Structure formats: C-alpha cells, structure tokens
Length: 116
Image (cartoon, rainbow, N blue to C red; front, top):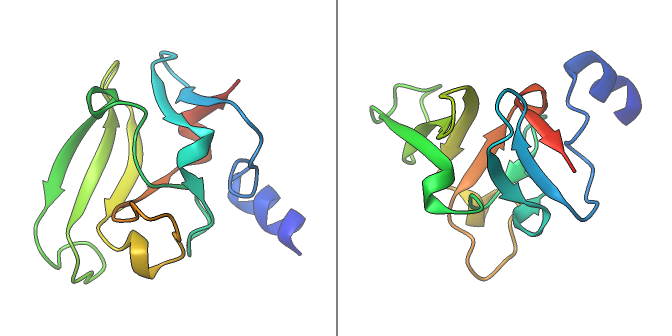
C-alpha cells in the first residue's frame, strides 16, 4: 500500500533515507541534508532544518490561517529561485522528530526537490 500511496501522491522522497543532498528541482540550489530528514505525519518528506538558514526564503502564515494549526506556520520557498517548496510547522518535537534539536517540521513537496 505504501508503494501505491507514493505513486499516487508523487512523493518519491517521503520514505527515502539514503545519504545525500536535497536541492531545488528548478535551480539546483542546495536545500536540505539527508541528516535532517525524519518520518513525519504527512505524505510529504519531513526535514527538521534547512542546510543553511540562507537556503530558504520564508513567509509567516497568520496564526490559525493554515488548516487551523495552533503552532507557528511558515511558507517555504527556495532562496535561489523562489520556487514554492511547502510549509514548516513548529511542532516537530510532537510529530515524530526524536532528535534533541527537534522544533520545526518542514514538509516539502518531492516534486520541488532533486536528490544527489
């Protein structure tokens, strides 16, 4: 069933944990290291933090405006070309990230990523 789910959703990177680097599918700008990836609650791949703070451009979403989330939410864009990547939620520690630095959960659309 998991294979069918990834085929339907196009989320080929959701359950992949191979060593490497995730970059923007449009411009190749480096975004995430495989070491920041974890299994989150959504179909999209989850990351705890970008490769560098300067890897992303973010826009804050008004409290409760995105699906009634009570935590902080931001939209994520590639800092290289402004491609929309997904959202970050300040609920990583309560949604599957067991890393000591767990705080944010970046849910990123696989189609916006390339992996090497």
